[in-house]
Length: 309
Image (tube, rainbow, N blue to C red; front, side):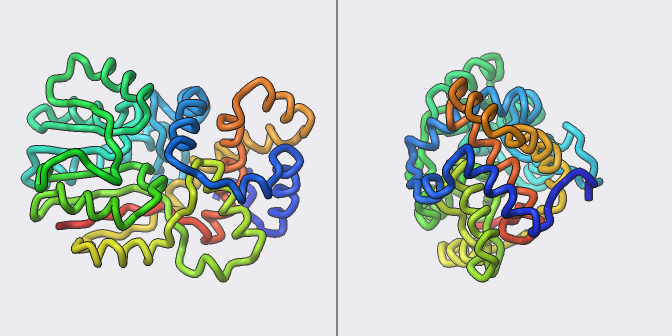
């Protein structure tokens, strides 16, 4: 574990107070997140993801299996997905929540014989994705809500998502739609965050930190992992892989927490920044500060899941 990361629960109350001095915690916890809020969050956070969080437009966590942060970790999921696709008889691939196209464009260039589609609800992101993918013939992007997919039954061999269906307001509906448009034998691959088993029995301050983290990322409520998998099973999916990669994103979380701690060190300066930049953008500092606490202390987990129809 990186020596600069702070994960001790004895320190958590202090940092919750720092957050409350800038962003009243009660207002955030009681906030109800809808699709418009999700769109606003990603629109306002675009510069944060580009210049602070990631590399060349990635909006997902870097996975560093060696425990040392490296920007190559932002390609870990995509390299693994490439292997999954190559191991299967795949012709058509769909990405849910494609954003500005970082993931699908990378894959389409690497796998030119396969047809890629990406959907998203943020028009500004789709404009960027279409512009960036213009010379690539085996990819297309379109507006689409994963709660109601505008595709025929059994349209795709392979569907994937990176940290997008955490925003779902009805996981059962999303899984039903994915199952419907996936061909028999097809795979649904996810890299996403979930609440860990036993979430409700955790200490109150850790639960508060987890909810603040979720809301600051425009997530209304994260599913508990086993509850979500039960829904998937009830839908008809077979679970092929369930891998907890929480420790492998900690190097990324450490880097972000160090930056967030600097933001909250001076509440007055933090409030000035809040007036200069959008609240959505600055609220990323909340999740950056708290996620090492919630992930290390088993409130949240980051999972690779492979489901098969």
